[in-house]
Image: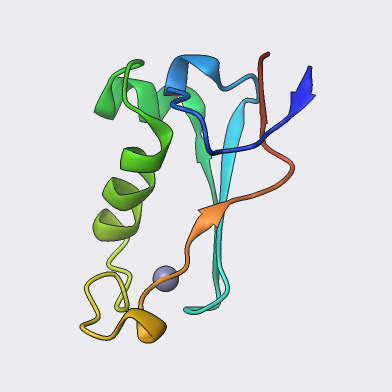
Length: 85
Ligand SMILES: [Zn+2]
């Protein structure tokens, strides 16, 4: 297994951990979502960068659509989440 670099077009099907951790320093939020539930909701082929937007929006992240780029939500996947090679 490899530590993630989220630059690629990984999908939910590549997630190898039971939970997918998401952190937003800007909003001081932290969450762990069941990978299986995410696949059920969004599909295994959902690209992880797109999924992040889905999740923050659904979670009601207030900064998600901030006008100013420096004020925008900075949610990212927790570094402990692991995807396959
Ligand atoms: Zn946020």
